[in-house]
Image 1 (tube, rainbow, N blue to C red):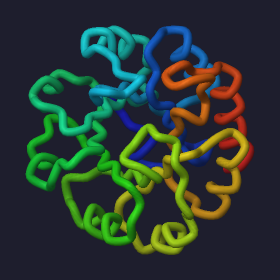
Image 2 (image 1 turned 60 degrees about the horizontal axis):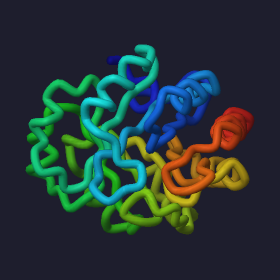
Image 3 (image 1 turned 120 degrees about the horizontal axis):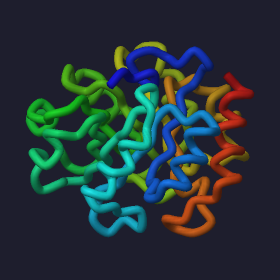
Length: 210
């Protein structure tokens, strides 16, 4: 599967990943609105947790130009994803050895800190860094100003997540110019329940900014 989100910036500007989708209708909304990637969450305890077989069925809905991303957090057996037709996002305590052994390209997600950015930017097995305001899925923002200063010096594409909404994503993009942005709770009616209009509005704001 080609990857318009991370191998190179999309022709239309900043890439958009909509995370935590669990049904055909929500995926249809995201695809029609112009999402570049869809995230499927396999982290225990998440209100967006999806079964592996169900996610594989939904992956068939994605066109070649849209990347399916398996979101893992200390997943017990990475071999379960040997046949995953997409990428893997690791947002737990996985170290460089775990990432090197992954069967698919890896996005390393982590809570914002300058030291973490420097550490993972040096990892040759990481395809992109997803910088969040938490360990993932909690909708916590962070001050992106210092990250924005670092981005031109980094060799790995940056995805910004955490507390993004249709109301604030334009300002974050204008400040930091990331390769992509990632949203989950910011386009929900309640935890795990996506709002179709907010998905549309989020992607519209990104497109109008880039």
